[in-house]
Image (cartoon, rainbow, N blue to C red; front, side):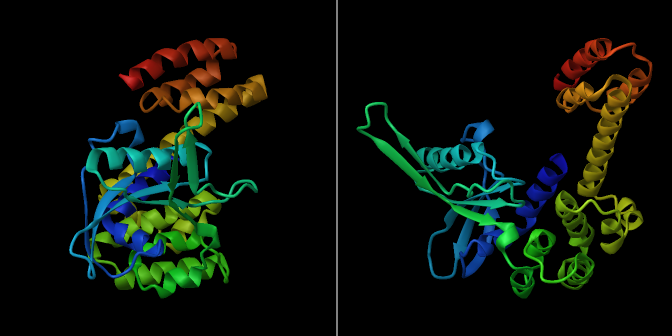
Amino acid sequence: MQERDRGGKWLIGFHADALVRLAGIRRIASWKAVQAEPVEPRRLPDGLIEVYRRDRPHPILVALEISTYAYTRLAKQAADVAQLIYLVRGVVPEVITLILLPRGRKPTPCELVIRSEEGTTSIRVEWKVIELWKVPAEELLAAGDVGLIPLVPLSLLDRPLDAILDECRERIHRDAPADEVLNLLAVTHVFAGLEYNDPRLFKRLGGTRAMLKSGSPLIQGIIDEALEKGRRDSIVAFLAARFGPEARALRKDLKAVGDPALEELVTLAATCPDLDSFREQVAPRRRRRRS
């Protein structure tokens, strides 16, 4: 979900206060991103910000996480973030996890209890979870915060998707700063694309031509990642057609391969005698990507 990651981090970088308000924290006067380097890199939150409220002299620390699904590991990740930030900064942060899509019937965890081996000590960590598909679209639109617009297509809709996307586009053009319009449209498209496989999405949100001409690093990055994903999907589909469904297991290996190696693998997929020979060629390209 690299496109989602890029879009989510942009949203946090420019509109983190919108997500904080969505979690129920009000009276925000200002906010700023803070460095999270002291925390172990693998456990960094998607965003760490200081929020200044009108009714408090000191800022509150907020850790933001955006996840496509409520993966099992998210509970440990949220608990680790809370504990590590406390150890480094001496304050317990407000940890907010935004889940974009439902998966299965299990409730999304919002707490974790860690106990010592002998049971003499326990640590309990709780955090705020927002399940986006349960938030009414009208609530997001009524908030009047353009930073929430990219979340609307994945919220609880009370109208057809086309009408919702039209309103999202109109709100962004009306309310967003001029230098953020195309980026907000792109992030809205990325999030909507997680749920809706519909080629009309880009057209409803303004079309690809204007976005491609914008020169935005965010949009170019999203497009590049989408092209890479399309090449990987084509390679796997071609191999599956030649050698059977077991070729789909190569999808994970191909995730570590980027351009231009992917272009070489397209030709290899058409000419290799069997899957084993293809795997042998993927391995050195994976090592090149990691280096």
